[in-house]
Length: 238
Image 1: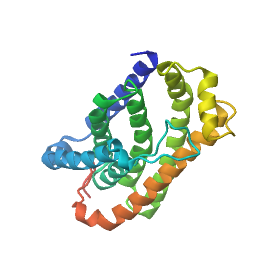
Image 2: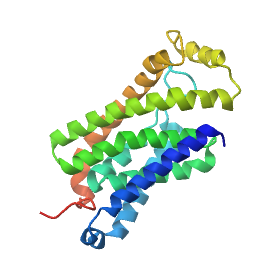
Image 3: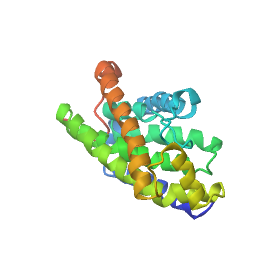
Image 4: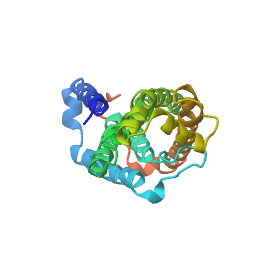
């Protein structure tokens, strides 16, 4: 693995450690009263759905104005629903499970999958945390807005400084070669920095995030009563 892969693995380790730290702040009563079998079952169910949306090609969409190596996938929808119903820890575990299942089949030396995990965590977890504190429409609106902005920032930075250099290294492409590939899809792209973010990363993520937010809202609003909502672990009793 090259330096960029190790950087992404370090990011993953930090994410896991942050959630362990989150759990360490929970009261003993909250942990002892938490239903761990239900927790594991929910992770398994939502993780399986997320994995299908992430891995099965029929659920992946390519756009003609974007480079051929990019595609839309909607695996964050089950994680969002799990996070809204059962808390951010469940949402993160769903994202982690679908990533771990995909890793053995990686065609990008793990870099693409770990990047997706970071993007998805930046998107799903803030909204889940905010909705945990504000369980109303205002909380939904604020959560989705904060998550959208954060995900766009994180994905832009990682694409410029990690993913594009990695693709050039992995496929032996020069800067000009990768630029030409991007220009074949969208001639407006004149460089792999600001133009790539403006004409590739932002449109891709805005379309994908918009679809994910809309579907999550509609589905969760329709089925939330069927999910047998429990207070997320760590929530104090009234």
